[in-house]
Length: 144
Image 1 (spheres, rainbow, N blue to C red):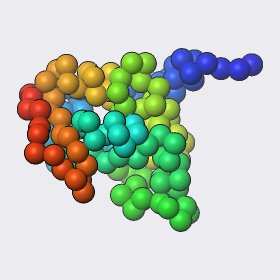
Image 2 (image 1 turned 135 degrees about the vertical axis):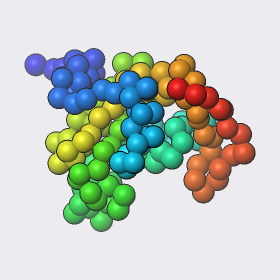
Image 3 (image 1 turned 180 degrees about the vertical axis):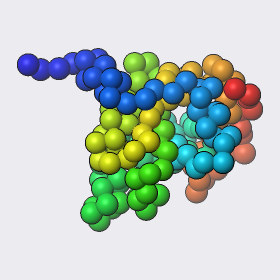
């Protein structure tokens, strides 16, 4: 039986933890390190992302998280790190499926941001523009 994206997202959400923007803000304010992974495309990331987030598009995540991959991302080598994935919002398919994959790849604390960037911005969360190698001076302030 073929599954729809909505059905796959629902199944992923049953396996992982979805954190509210308030919960993510709390985790970011704690002493425990959290890796924020924006799983949107680079063009989307440049238009706005959570402060400190890294951009690993959904289509590259498995290769970047695989410890044996020649293109692995060293920032994802510690399976004990708290990892929070996010996308734009909507049904949250990209972030939920990404957190599910990371959990299946051995990440013990993989979660997704419920409502994605849209929910973060709605609650007044800060957003950075540009990329780490091409930062933009513009920043949307906010308090979640």
